[in-house]
Length: 493
Image 1 (spheres, rainbow, N blue to C red):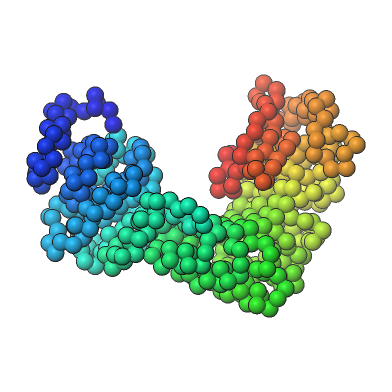
Image 2: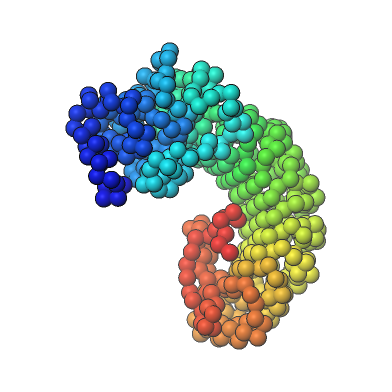
């Protein structure tokens, strides 16, 4: 916060208070509310622990957005802040001015500390719970309304974040008076004990986005599954890197898959499902998808799926209103094109994003899906990179997408004519050949006049999460850039 932007009298009053901490602490009861944000920033920066404890107890706003400060607190400063909350929670009669309901440790309110009092007073109650505090709770905290602490959490093996570890321990010892909420929870491998210990502290219905990855054994998954059904407000589920013995042919793994599906059936708010690098039972439909309600986003990548899996999935009610669909790095040997066409025909009126990436489609498969693609009247983003099509097929595809009025961005593969001819797999671009291809495409696109951004992908790596592409500029030239691969919910249109 720039001191030059503040009235000099306010600044001088604050400096006078900080020069005598005992005086400052005694004066908090009568301190003007508009000075609290500025005073907190100064006390926090100087790590005046005793003053920080007192300031937290007298905080006059419903929310303390600690996560929005420029620097994360060191552990000792954070402990002092929680000590202040302990002192307050221990009091039978709380200060009349105290209104604090939420300690927010996320970075959710940019520039809130620079804007100061007016913005601080207008922070609305965080959207981490469906059930908000009622008017009957009043402006102050009551015994029936615990203090809410919000932080996005990551559970993993190895070295832990010291601040998170201390917070979990602190909240565990005060569960009757403190609710620990986590809108985003990531479980990146971990012991059964560590996962259970964390999940027993977190208010599960506060979790809206969940990433589960790298579970090393079936016992760990069986331990986690019962908690999933209590995440009633879950909107996004990302389930990745579960290859091996999870959903393969044994009956006990089939049991685990069914239990997982039953828990998913209780997630009535689930809208986005991402499944990456997961093996399912070969002969049965994936039980984890059987009980789902209507999805808006579905992403399947690097999964071992059969024809029966996809036919079952694409006929499920949960896929009938899709807005965003990504199929990436799936073996087309395992399913027929007719199965995919059945899905596309069912969502042509709702689909806004379609990504058919690295599926080894050839001219024949592209020709088969073009009629369904042309009917996707709401499509805004189309990605087809990683497929093996000729220059002639690419021109036909561009001709179709140029007529799609809502399309804003298209990501296409470099045609086969762009690569070294001796390579069995066309991964290495031939510079001269590709230059000729771009020249022809530039003229073709000038004649077509598409309204969407046209990009030609020349190289990609899902492992590194990067791809390289050429974008046609307004002056007719091509710009080569490299970017991270976007998730369906963060695509730049």
